[in-house]
Length: 570
Image 1 (cartoon, rainbow, N blue to C red):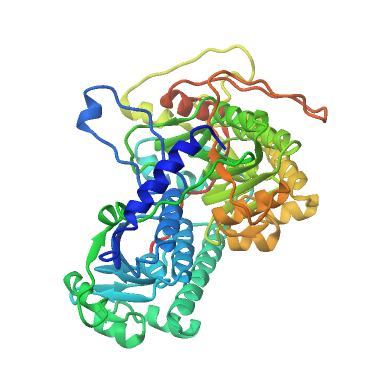
Image 2 (cartoon, rainbow, N blue to C red; image 1 turned 135 degrees about the vertical axis):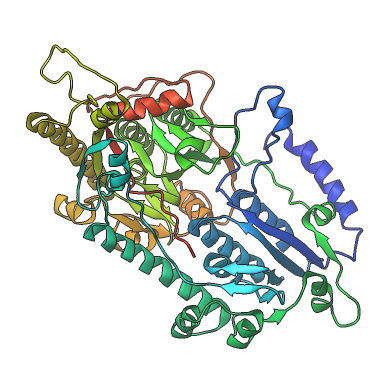
């Protein structure tokens, strides 16, 4: 218990007593469903004056916030109905999986949940199908059309401006450079996308069938018949009523008086807040989000729709956070949250080493978000346990690298460039000429060594043979459901699953609620404690700006980066 727990909880208890005086009017709470629902609330660097006044930033509601909200609403018997009002939902498949589980947990407390959807895509309906009722307005439509993945190829476009990609990759499923070096999709690329779509579609079909009491075959038939009008959706059993928003109060009433609808902001003032005490032993959470780069983590103040730019996970920052978790004697176990397409091989290896060191002293459970591919799996492999959602994208155990030759671009622009050099390999990564045969052999050798090291790290962490590693590696991306079948993931679930595993591995009481804390890097640098095994040592260097981090990543020339930041449309 912290010194401030007693006065804080005393005040909270008094407030809860006052809130309990309101007996009526809390029957129905309306919750907006919008945004991307990140695992944790993002913390951004503040903007300087006057931009902090011109561009205010409100953090998105996170899955962490939703867990707290479910606990509050589920524990208050005055709330009988919850209406989910769908707006602009941008959450990916893995966040929707967790949201769906939270809705089922809320239903288990006896609450009646209704989803009001002005219109619904496949993923919107996947979430709504977890509710007791699905309601559409007369002007709405159900657009659960299925899933579609599209790949973009830029080889011909780059040729128009005189850029020639000279890229190498290991192995055939490592198709990240195909965006630049091909004009069409390769067969391994198509095979991998087909498998991912199959896995996603199976999850959607199963969830809808279970939620709506239909057979999977019938759900597939209905999806093929989309789009459906509200009346057709009701007739097919995919919706329960056709109502405008102002008709919901009467629909949810007891038949005598309309149920008053309260927004969450209005209801929160009267709902009892849980009283919690800080436990002596803690569960620490270290979060890795964004492109993995050497140096320090960076997150720009304003959210932009460019995942490679918005957040960067610097090895220096992540390593320091892991060392702080190791040094804090109160932290009994660590949940390592990973949301990344990968990135720098060097940075990934430095973080991987730190996870291995930490595991020698405390249990480490990896919690994968929507994507933990390539370098993201590299840093996951040494953990005691790995938890993923069925729709997580992971694996992509492979390497690629190379350069873009700009000689044609310079000619088009009338730019003349000549060079002199000392050292046979001084122009290895020059943009003036493609690789020579000898240079290409050097590049392939370096990629091969990095690939072998990557596989060795995974084989050691997961207890797999070299032969088995080659079967499931080769750059192939797997969904969480597929990864569990082949041994890359231990459990399917979300934060609660990872928390239960962390308590089990740390020897803590499974029924007890332990305080969970986010572990941030310390103000002063921590040096590593000795590792029990004697192995090679590697070091990194700090980078202090976002653009510098990108430049350093480009200079490295060898990347453990996923084929794409994939978004399955539905």
